[in-house]
Length: 318
Image (cartoon, rainbow, N blue to C red; front, side):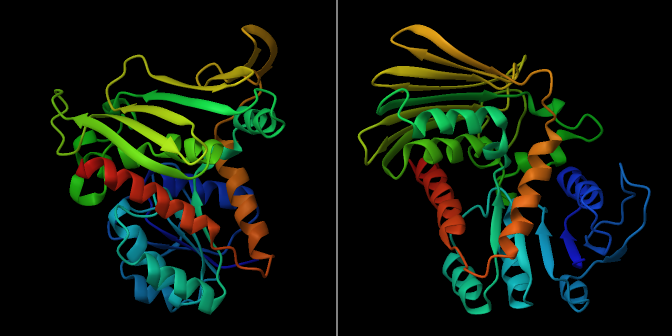
């Protein structure tokens, strides 16, 4: 069993702790600056308010699940201390320190994974299977829409105190909801041009954007349109991939993906009766621990994660 340090114990931090326990990991320590009672966990853990003190315990693995603006700083310190590191998305709010983290990762032979858990959704896996088999031909267009009402995310806390709505902490839907950007690059490859617009005129009164529209063109010639917002009631999350021979349509809230060939539905993959969202988080942790067994360090993960950060910052500077 490995000693695991969890940095940041908000909602996602508690989820990771519960999942680690379910996977059989018992030697867990915490780094957190707030002395709040855990909301979903009764068990007590050795806890530190200072990261350097926590690292003196020589953890093998660090899971970084604190606010976005702390991710890179904490990751660098953990890799320096020879931890393999799992970082919640996004990897950072900017690229400062990217080279340092990458060099440390290679030098210390540590694995780093960024938590874009939507890749583990069974419908997304099925979509990738269809795309890789060229079932819809060449990808021409990727369209994604994801909107949720931010105050409804964590009803037990004031949404205005969340990092997700604070510019200085790396908040805003472009980065916080960047799963859709990850999936777009996952399916379409390298991007070459980005444009977009965003605003913050709703009653949420955040100092980040409330919504964003993103346009991306790719080396392949494909283009994409991604819409993200903190406002939709009811929530909506859909992806359409249009190809030269057909189309794939995914509805997250129905947990269903459909395949159309020349306008006619040919296949439907429905996991609505069996889907458990927490399995996405469990499976990404399993994958992370499996990669640790592989001695060949793969830098593609953090390179990709920083492409998402680069893209997000390109939009915000337009």
